[in-house]
Image (cartoon, rainbow, N blue to C red; front, side, top):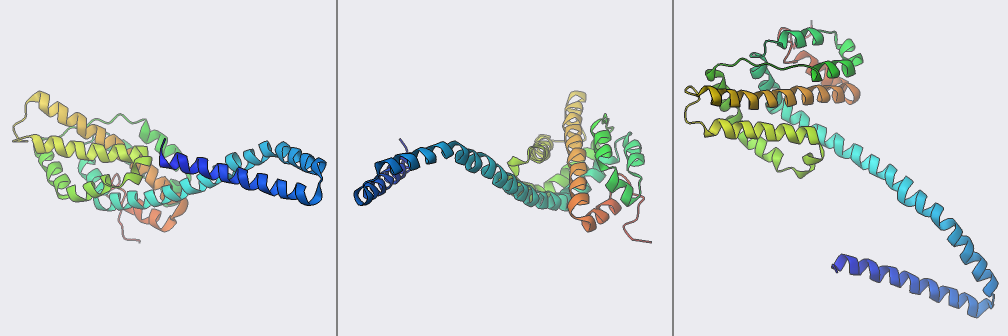
Amino acid sequence: MSKRTNWFITLGFSFILVSAALYFLHFTIFRDSDFIFRYLLAELAFLPISVYLVTIVLNSLLGQREKAVRLKKMNMVIGAYFSNIGIDLLRIIVRHDPGADKIARELQLEEMDLHEYLDAIVSRLDAQHYQLHMEPTSFQELHAFLKQKQDHLLRLLENTNLFEHETFSHLLWANYHLLDELDARKDLLDLSPADYDHLLVDIRRLYELLVHQWADYMQHLSSYYPYLHSFAVRTNPFTPWVSVELN
């Protein structure tokens, strides 16, 4: 039995002893066992309601609030990821997606429209079939970029709180797995067809996760940080022709 369990048992037993001592003191002073019995019965009758209100309702409300606070903090870290890695990584991969124009047309909306219809846009992005056509030189570009950002990726992976955010933790692992795969190749310009296809599958997996997380993050910004959302719209990697400068 652990020390923590022993502590709970000792505390519970102490409360019972204190309660029994107070009831005994009441009986000694007032000699009214009927009152003690009726009061004890009334307290026991209310106990299930008290347990429900405290352990279920109140704890649930507190848990939801704590979860919302944690998610808000995690989205700050996700924002740092996209500022430092994610947006540039998307720009690199989008150039090799023949279907990127279709995604761009869906996102070629005014800022207010994007805010209003973002749920529908997220659904359409999730339904995309991502097909990439990359030259081996593009593998070198990806490798150099991820290698440059390796320290930042490691720091993110060390943050255990991020593992509560399942989709983002999958994205981080996909980032690091692709870096490991690219690191392991002696010559990225001399790949067998099977090896080329294998790397392309890893990049496509990363791309899908990246697009999904980016859309989810955009939705978060549109709901809580309109000024950050405005900048994100103007730096949208799927619409590179949109100027970050306001006219």
